[in-house]
Amino acid sequence: MPEVTRHDIETWIRNIPTGEFHYKEVLEGGIETESLGKLRRIMYDICHSSEPICETVGRRDGYYRSIQNGAAPIDWQAVESRRDSGLVLPFDLRKYVFIYPDTTTIVAGSKSSGKSGFLYRTTALNMNRVNTILLTNLEGGIGMLRDRFEAMDIEIPKPAPFKVLNVNADFHDYIKDRDTLYVIDYIDAPEGVDFYLIGAAVAKIDKKLQGLNSVAVIGLQKPSTRDTAFGGEQTLRVATLYIAMDTSKLKIIDGKVPANKTVHPRNMQWTFQYSNEGTNFLNIEPYHGE
Image (spheres, helix red, strand yellow):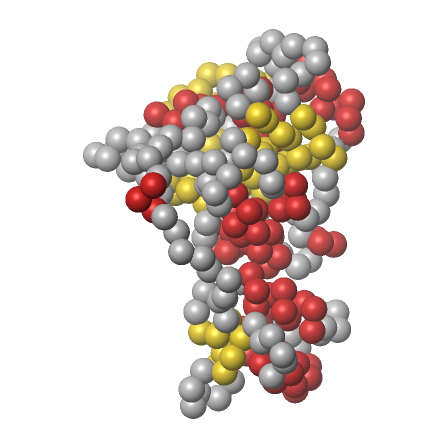
């Protein structure tokens, strides 16, 4: 475990806890026993700083809560009832899930599952409907990105009616335009180890969306052995739609608002064949197994 730093602890406090927490839970309990004394001293300093971001909880030794501030009154009655984002998704997923503006969709995919293909196809399906920006780490290079778009069964004009930006971190810095679809391929943990920061990165993006009438579709990596992405349960918190992709299978893990109130989309699944060269999903069929 790397040396415990105040910066890491403050980042965790600002982005992860949703209620009370014990100091041993900081950084997902990854702090070694010999560093717990240092952690307590840092927690004390944070609580007694000029602008504290957390405080102790009553008489319960070792328990803290993050301090939430900066909230402004919301004129919720001025918002149109059941206002649809207009987002179009592959697999006709909008038949099953209603998606409001200012919300986040997560696509958690295992290696070579078609996650990037899903995200590129989402970009192309929406490019003539809304201002669309693809934020990508260009894994595989710009040549692969070009070939995947050009081989798609969707005609893309030249110049393309969407922007592509090479971004590797701090994706929330780019969330600033109104009436925009942000497609993010993909968020990874710094150095591949601090997985708890993935949930924090997703939360920052969702927070920046509020009031913009924009939406984000975010790709995350996941193990093939589970449905949730690296970062675990924290990546589920803000998503209005959460999708898991494995080789030849797509599953809705959660959809907060069903398109049809009588049919909840949770655990709906489909099998498919993926044409990697063309970024196309073929032979899509409902699946009712495990």
